[in-house]
Length: 223
Length: 319
Image (cartoon, rainbow over all chains, first blue to last red; front, side, top):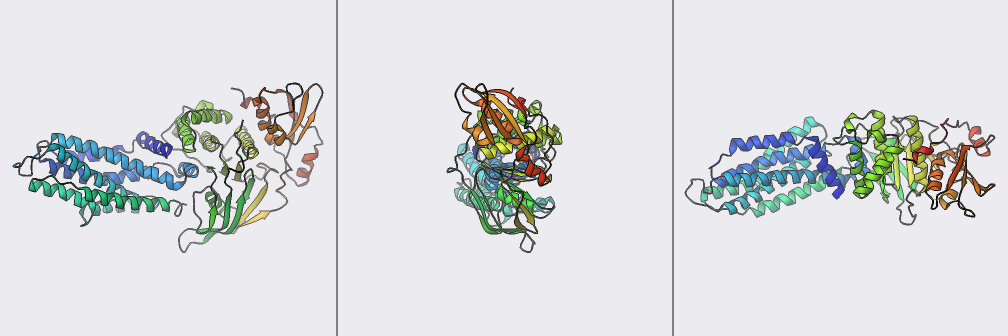
């Protein structure tokens, strides 16, 4: 598995296809986050914006190889494991991106409630932001895994499905991503730092299930 | 040279009543396929285009799951696709290093094996070339090298010879024979009926989705043209076991020399075994078996034309 992960990570780094989503993420953060704004609001934005980026990264990793090369790796390691490595690398990339962004946003933001009246601990706020960010990275990965190969192969359907999936994951009631982000926003209004562990656990479960389905289908839907 | 694969450790692959269709209402691409791939077996699959050959190979390589029936056993597998348009952001050597580790080699072993196989296929000068700049033939060499470098227990070749130049084609045939001699199984499809002519242990034809054994073309001992290797070892020693296994005939000749008659496609393996023995044997001469060659008569009678080949390439072993 280490060899597969290293191969997929090298593929992602060297292909430079990860650049557009990273730039998009930076741009969205630049629009929504300014220094001196209330920390939890900014962290909520940081987490929410990562979800579509994570989904996009999964799509990039899953479609990075020509199918002939994918077959060579699949025969050697098993197509399920090869696909698991793809998705894991995408998740790790999204997670790393989210951690960097969260630390940076925590650093430049004002550690207060939304009305700047109540002081908050920057460290606690940052930790809450990390939990929410990881929940969004996970759920974005789930959306990505369910809207690319092997489930949806034609880009004409896969890309709209990815966008719609990412949007729904952020707005549908009961979605762990929405729960995590709104915990931060509510906390900001109330002047308390939430601990969105439950949304993170929910996101982890949903994502594990989505990845399991995608990996199991690699040998059922191949052609 | 080749790593021996002990038979007991190796998993044999068995297809039991396997059928495959794509989609719930799709037509059956394959149905009722029973096939056992024993260690060391060389199996040829034939069939017209679109009959399900490639699907069968993908099932064998574990890239695809059967819709019905089951596949038992999973040897360490390597697969070579027909075309390898490698738009990958690696150099050939880096890609092979990655694939070597995916196949289970350590990084240094993978790097060594990558160099070795690129050299055998005459692509050593492309080691540092980005994959995207390789010619079709060179990227096919990389595809073949990735499959061979970890000495797989099962090698699945889907028209792997297509796109290779002549020396590389010969080298791949030699590598296939070596692999089977070392106990690995090889299943291949090739449009050229002369490919490894007379060597497969079994030949099957895929006809309308069913697998039918072909008779009359699967004699393991009809080995095509032979060559005679004269080699000299330390006084009083017999040739290495590996040589004896590969050879059709080993005779003692004058002056501590041995006269080894071996099918042409295994001659590289014999030479490697001789040179790699400790202490190494001295190869005195390598020449085609003088006519009439008894072993090639049945081949001619069956109408199999021996492929014209250059006198054997001993230099593959030397740096």
